[in-house]
Every structure is written in structure tokens, then in C-alpha cells.
Image (cartoon, rainbow, N blue to C red; front, side, top):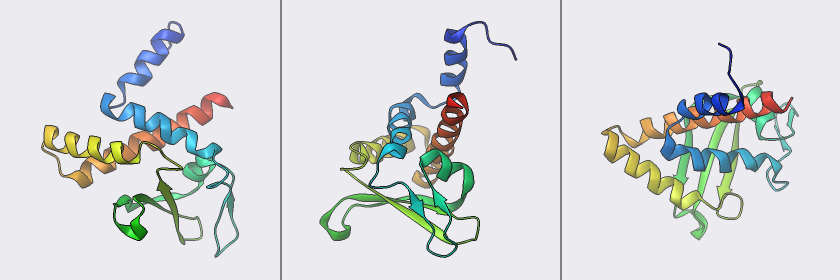
Length: 143
């Protein structure tokens, strides 16, 4: 498909994302620049992921890839799970310091679940898939 200008390309890309997700997806895309999170190193094989795009491109999602822990250590956090190429499960912990929208994200997911009638886990899966796709597309566009 050929694009007729940058505006049409943006419209086509934006239309493939849930509008309720987009603000949160764009914020996740900025996480790769956070030196508190990246580079991420696999303790089993030594693989190093330099940023979020590298991490998304070169690891594999797991079934429960994004989970909230609102009471753990008295600090609300969300854990993201992905498998390194060696099979080891890697974890990234997102807190309000690394992802300021964390509480709003889970509120939005709850609202989307009620609005759509889908279980929260399914909405989380859709969010994660769209977020990963966005990050990959942004990385490919920048290259």
C-alpha cells in the first residue's frame, strides 16, 4: 500500500491502535531511554538489551506479560515478563518513577474491560500487543 503523504501514513498507523491505549503506548515507548531500566542483561546467558525496542525485538512474550502489583513493598508497580532467547524469563519493574502513568494505565484497562465486556487479562494482552507493535514500528521508522 502506498501512502499519500505523511498525514495519511499517521492516520493509517493511528487507526490500527485503540485510542484509549495510545497515550499509554507512547509513554511506554519512552522507557527505553531510561538508564534505570536499560541496558537490561540476562543473568543466565549474558545477552544485553540496550533499549526497549531491542528488548521487544529480541525477546519473546510470555502469557502473563504485564501484571500489576499494587501492594508489593508499599510501592505500586507493574511487572513485565518476557523470555530471553535462552529461555530465561526476564522482568522489568515499572514504578511511578519509571512510568508516571502506571496507576492511570490500570484504571484505563479496567474501564476498557467494562466497556468491551472483555476480561481484564484480554484487554492487557491487547494493550501489550499494540504497545509492542508501536515500539517496533517506531524503531523501524527511526532506522
